[in-house]
Image 1 (cartoon, rainbow, N blue to C red):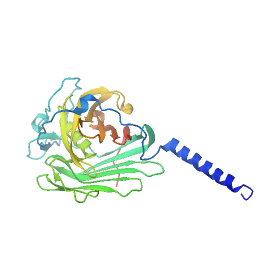
Image 2 (image 1 turned 45 degrees about the vertical axis):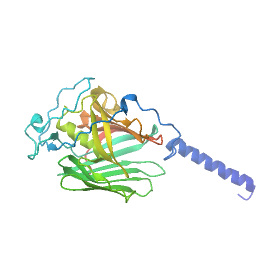
Image 3 (image 1 turned 120 degrees about the horizontal axis):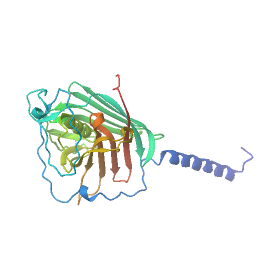
Image 4 (image 1 turned 90 degrees about the horizontal axis):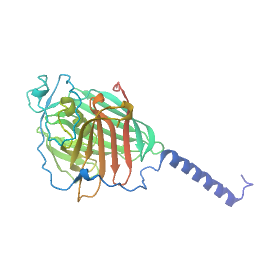
Length: 322
């Protein structure tokens, strides 16, 4: 090495560093940065008037396997026709009347994970039900910077899935959590690691960003006569430092290949609506698959930064043994 001039030596090191960085960017992208602009939101997803938010509805657990109805194809706008437990059958547990509700069985789902359209490694979603308790754990591997991890734990109360703790971690960064301090009526207070002074009132039926999909799946497992095309469902949702009312538009039940690994199958597409005068935060699209007992077959989240994270179902496996 002593035969190489000093200037040439540093140029060689710089060239090697640039080459390595270029290959990493080519194969893995630039983590947490985006050079794309946020695309415009579809007109049908923009809220231009005040929406009437219905009070949360109680659920009635359905302990009998549900009988699936024939697929429906309609483009008509329909109101929420949530079926009661009596309509779904008399196998409901408990004496509380309400929307028929049936938790999906424990399982592990595997997804192809994409960041800004670039394929990452295989992501896993563990859904575990133990009596009235649940655990939802999502691991999205990302080379070099470490995985994206999301976890939600809680139980089932009178309004359905009731998270107790939701936490998330990106790579080697410190985890962030949201804690639900619920009372016996499903209300209470929220606490955030990012905003200790922010303790908003907790509404019954409040979900986190991932438990909301399993709340929808449980309602559809109870009765698929809900959320026809055009229906707007309001759900209070917690992130790591916010509690907001999210409005999801249902595109109804349709046969499509939106989940390629399942081929032509019956899916439900829900899309988060945006208020006309609010700053854009994120766009969330969820496809729930009937062949997966309405578990999510595709999830797409477009952040305000322009980054797009997408999970597309690959295969289903048994729940983890531990």
